[in-house]
Length: 505
Image 1: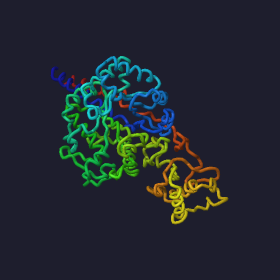
Image 2: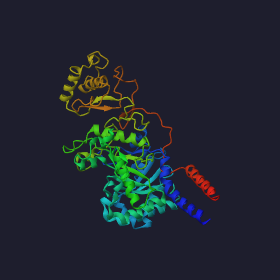
Image 3: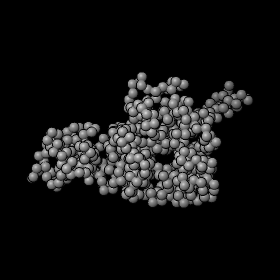
Image 4: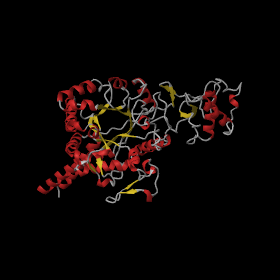
C-alpha cells in the first residue's frame, strides 16, 4: 500500500509539472502586435481599433494601460495585454495598496467590456532599470493579489517581459543559463509564474543576434529561409536540429529555466520583428528582409510548429510593431519596425498565402502599385516615361479622351503606368519601386471608367484616410493561453484510471 501511495505522489507531481506545457500543446498559437505611440501624428484610438479589426488582429500588447485605448477596444473581443510602465514599478513593488489602486483604476474600470487577458509588470526591468530588480517579484505578487481579490486571477495572467540578453551561452541551447547576477530574482520569479499558471514573457530579436554576430550567423538562418540539412545548426548535447535563430533562442530560454529546475512554464514572445529601413551601417534593414522575416515568422507560429525542444507546443508571438514610430530617437532602424505608417498604409505586402485571415495586407488579396506622395516630380515623370517606353506598358488609356486621362496629373498617370507594369510582371518582388517613387498598396486606385489592371471593380475600405483590402469576418475563436476545463478534466480522469489500476497491483 505504501509503495503505490509513493507512486501516486510521484505521478501527481509529474502531472502538475506536465499540465502547463501539455495544455499549451493543445492550444493554437496566436500572432499579435505591439502598439507603440511614438508617432508625430498618432492615430486616435478609434482609428487604431478600426485598423486592428480590418486586419483581423485579435491580440494586442499595450505599453501602458491607456484608458482611451482600452475604451476603444471595448466590445471587440480583442485580447489585450496591458503594461505597468517602468516608471511606476518602484512604487507598486513597495506598496500593496499602490498595486491595488493601479488594478482598480486601470483594470477593474475596463475589464467588463474590454478583454484584458494579461498584465506585463514592467518591460525588460533587469536590463534597463536594474535598481528596480529587488522589488520586481513583489510588484508581480501585489498586482496578482489585487486580481485575486477581484476574482480575476484565472482570466488575467501576470508576468514581466525580459530581454533575451539575460540568457548566456545560448548556443547550443542546451548549455544556456540565465545571467547568474539575476538568479536571486529569476528563481522566485519563475516560482511565481509556475504557481499562478502564468508564462515567461521574452523579447526575441534575431536581427540583433545577426548584427552582433558580424557574419558568423547566415542571413538565411535568421530569416527562416529553407536550409539544406548540412547547413542546419545541431545541438551536440541533444542532437536537436535548428533551422532558425528564433527557435534556438526560445529553446535556450527553456533550457535556462530547466537549469533552475523549472520545466513546466510556457513562453510567450512579447516582441519580435525586423526593421524595414536603417542607417548606412545597417544594410540588412530592408523592406525585403523585414517582409521575409515577419512573413516567415507568422507562418512558423500559426503552423503550431513549436520548437525542436518542444515540438507542437505553442509559442505565441507579438510582432514589434503596428506602426512605424517616427518620433523615436536613435538609429534610423529604431523608427522603422512597423507594419503600417501612421495613416494605416502597409509598409510592405506580406507573403502569407495559406496563413489564415489575419493581416489583410497579404498577397492573397489584390495589391496595386501607386506613385508615392510627395516625391520629386521630375523623378516621377522620368519613371512614367520609362514605364510607357522601355517598360512596354500600354499607356493608351491615358491619352486625351481615354478613360484614364483625368485627372491630368503626372502622379495620376504614373500610378496607372506603374500599376500596369507591376501586374504585367505578375506583381513580382521589386517590380513596384521605380527608384523609390512607387509603393505597393491594397487600395484599388480605379475610378469611374478608369479600371486598373487586376482590379475586380471593388475598392477597399478606408481606414485612417487610406484603403485596406476587404476581409471576411473571422468566425474562429481566438486562442487562449489557459487550457480549457475539459482538457484538465480529461487528464485528471486518465490519472484517476491509473490510480485505480494501481490499487490492484
